[in-house]
Each structure stands twice: as structure tokens, then as C-alpha cells.
Image (tube, rainbow, N blue to C red; front, side):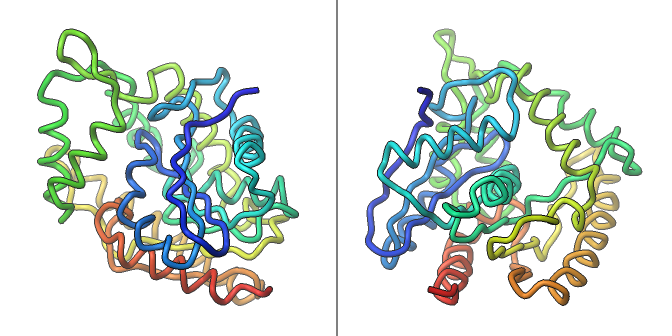
Length: 284
């Protein structure tokens, strides 16, 4: 049986399972987890092909959900609130769909995607996959830290997270994760779910959901100024859909957070407070 690499942060109280985003690792959650253990037992896992978890092929959401369930079984966790950021947020919702009796609730932190036919999606995909799974130069970690500091992420936290998200190679270079074949499969899965649209995607998920959008946009990278317009347009459309859903379905709570997309590293205190408040108000 394949098990995912897990960090048990300890703590006592309602069980939380923390999932990271694409190209990241469970280390992203360290600062928030340290705060959440005051009232919860907290586990974090590396998704397949990320961090120290084994890879799978093909990389599909149903297989990932099954591996999460197996990993929780191995740790004696029959029920959990599954909390995910970005890719992890989509997986958290899909876990709740597949295991309604085991997912007390799910939290999706800015994990929304678009279909291949969405205007501008092709250009975004090209940019995303241009360096996915590449072998990065020796200065990779320093470059990652410099980028993170631009978003208000402390350098020490950014360095630890960057090192955990890549694999050092003997010649001093870095294998970025997931490797390219896996990255292509993950993007296919994202497009598959995104093509449904938010409303249809969430149909049939009966567990309580906390759906969170970033309240601030990322500053554009040089040469990608066009991406700001794309992401702002998509975020507005998602927000409109979520507003309608939250009025129709009492089990859906929609929030915004004063942060950009890498919120777990940028504002771990606010993320922890949001998650803790949601869990505190869940029905017994």
C-alpha cells in the first residue's frame, strides 16, 4: 500500500489534515500548523510527486483521494476536516465528495481553476508549463526566496519552504517537483475540474465547505503583465458564482482573506484564525 509522506504536528482536538499547492510541499503549512495545534490535532501530507511523497502514474484526483484515505487510516484518523491550499483545496473538496462520512468538512483556500476553453487559458497554461518539472540552476533557492520576499513572505520561511519543495541533485542543481510528466497530468486534472464551472463542480458535495478567495492579486511578473487582467477577471467570475451558492446552500461558507494567492506562507496567522473559526462553528 502506498502511503504519503506525513508530518504529525501533534496537538489535541478536532483533527485537521493540511494539503499544499502545486509545486509546493507540506512545509508551507509549518507556521499555520504551529498555531492550529493549540486546539486541534494537525497532520500535513505531501501530495503524490511532491516533497518526499512517492510519485504515481497517472496522477489523477481519484487516486490521490484514495491515497489520502489510506494515509489517514495508517495514522488512526477516521474523520478529519481537510484543509487545502490551491491544488490542495481542489483535492480537499474532492476528498469530501468521495468520503462524506470521513470528511467532517473541507476548506478550499483559493483552489479554483478554469477549463481549457476559458479565454486566455491556453496562454496561462503555456506559461505554467514552460518550466514545470525542470532542473533548476544552483541559485534556484535564492531566486525563490527573492520572489517570495516581494510578496511579504519572510526570507527564512520562504527558504525552508523552497528547499522542501525541490530535490537537490549531486551537481548542485535542483530538480523541481513535480517532475514534468506528472506536472502535465496534474494540469490535465485541473482543466477537467475547471471545465465544469464552480457551481457544477460543487454539486453533490454535501459536507460543510469553507471556500476562500485571495483578496489581493499577485504583482505581475516581468513580461506577464497580461496575467493580472486574466486572474482578476477569473476571480470576479468565481466570486459571483460563490455568492449565489452561499445564498442557496447553508453548508457553504464563502470568505475573502487580505492576502495574495500564497496566503499560507504570506499570512499564516490569518489563515489559521480563519480555519479555526470555521471548525469551531461546525455542528457537533
